[in-house]
Image (cartoon, rainbow, N blue to C red):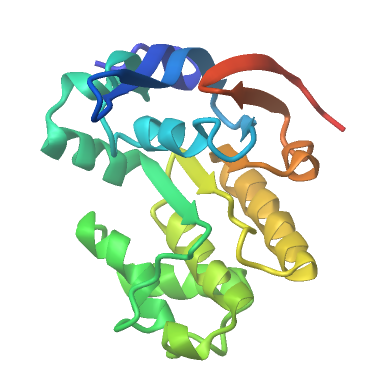
Length: 233
């Protein structure tokens, strides 16, 4: 049952180790501990190979840790089986990826409708239309991804992520495939939508300037937390 605390996400002693071909072991993550309050914005920063993407996968229940726990909305994610984690993820988490992850055979509005329909929520088309208007794509709803620019594709991805009104939004290098100006526009939109929706945002990035837009940051180095603190710039 939910714990009743104000934390959307609670991570304790989280670790991930993989076996190597030579019989050795590689510690990808070790002793990760943090919590994220409702409505908070948190950046996870670090160089390539520091464990950021692995951590994000564990937070989402897409991978299984070798140690520790992740509690989402008070639920122990890894006390659940794969189907249980998928159901929890579908109910509480929205995703924004560097590579957009739109389905090429679906139009913009169909891409946004998909998670709503999978969740069995009523009024999927109306909700999808609302969010596409909100991200400035009211004239592009029936276009397929291949006919949209990178910035437009990421706006569709944002509309899709917010459409289910998730408690937690996980964003993995959301500007990584965009030019500087388009990336800046997307970041401003993410934070605006996040404030309006009251969502909790966990953002993975190697960009310290982007991290500084969040209230708090966690820095990873070689799979360990080396510093954490408030930024509030």
